[in-house]
Length: 115
Image (cartoon, rainbow, N blue to C red):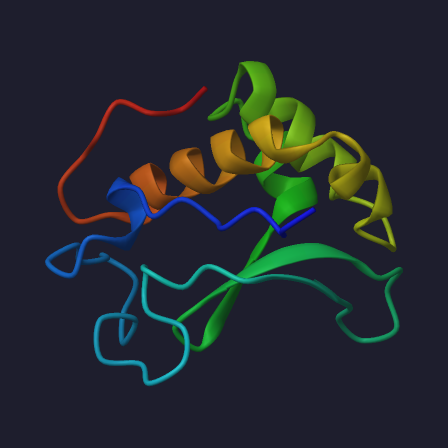
């Protein structure tokens, strides 16, 4: 069975810009590339985050911020621990919802996609 190809959506639009300083010109992590990863700060417990420019968006903090709802919130909570396995276990729907919500929050022009 062939591997499914990821869908390119509005979060990949070439004209999409971010209010995060330096993100629009960052060679690896502009708003169109929001990679998930695990990070830690000063010996704290590792947790999930998303790179944007030279910054990392802390998904545990985002999950507690009140800015997300629905599948995006469930995905952020699942990615708040020391591995991304719980997030990956949720499937593609919640991961896409999280990507859309984070893109909307970080975009210069507001979009209504926080679910």
